[in-house]
Length: 471
Image (cartoon, rainbow, N blue to C red; front, side):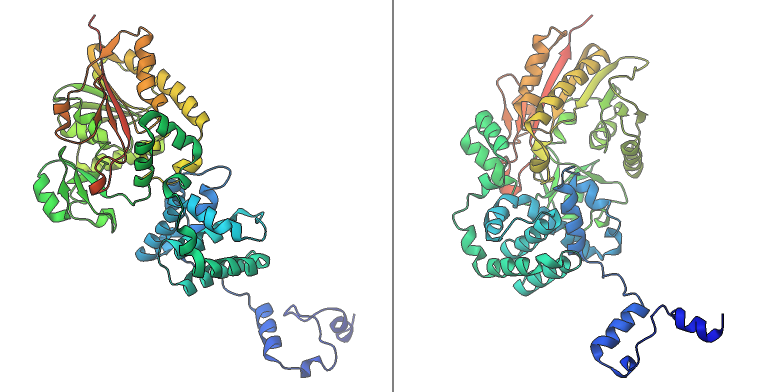
């Protein structure tokens, strides 16, 4: 084959076909841009908070309902964002989740049709959250949402643009008359809370979920000193409470191990175990380690049992930072057998976590009545296992961060009705040190998110103290 023949049959090495005669004489800006794009691939789009927020929403609100915290912190692009943009990405997602019912009622009826792709619906929700609740300048909220959609859903851009522009001008009016508490609470949860606590309290609980919670801290000592340095107030039980904001690990005392993050309600179970110095205590489901840290700091000989190896590593790191000791065992409480029975067992059982919606606004959209039933059965098995590890006359402290009676009051009633050799050890009001939470006639503690509302609320917990009959 001659050189001339080969040139006629093959394109040049640059990859572009030979132009037809005369074409090279046409020189327009549009043509130059096209040729440049072919010759040199365009760089990937810049990273931004809104892009990460959409990725997280797609996973959290998708069919698998991935947990928000795990998904957000595990996003591969998060570390590449500046701290300020990371905080904004988190705020975007949590606002959508807290206000999902209101957003959908205001925005979705404006669509000509419901997009078949979840990311498009979530882009609309993201733009609506900025316009309706975050006071984002309308031009930025609309333009950035449209820019996101243009990267993979160009066909939907005109509709998204039109709906968001309408929300920018009429959105506030659409919010008027909305029942925020009801709209942002799934029907089954509302009905459950109304039946358990009454309509008025159900509404107060739902309203507490709409507010970003404060940061609660447990301290090893010197509460007044740390309160001053952190700008925090001291709650009756000794928990420090400060406004959220900033990176936790950048706050005074973090590196020194002076405190750890723990909601005021989550700190109650270990406190209600009373004096534990020198006693052998088992903490079942111990990670991330707040209760283990409390017990160790109080002088208990703690065995921390954790099923997940990954979470156990997190527990090790937390205790290391706090310079506290505990025997850490990776194992399933339904299978693990201790060498000797314990003086006390703290069982903070796996649950629906509906008491922590203030901090985890994805929970209402991820749980269902079937989860309540399934987890209540699992809690029954764990209670039986915990009793098997308890010495005669030993104490069992049962806690769940759930608002569902099936996982709390009814779970304990079923246990006691089963003739398992335990009795209630009623909690006295004085042990709560003035904390304004509920104490049932049976001596069990019920905290609700609307308790301490003036200072930011509290997680919802049920706590019961039991004692095994002597030998």
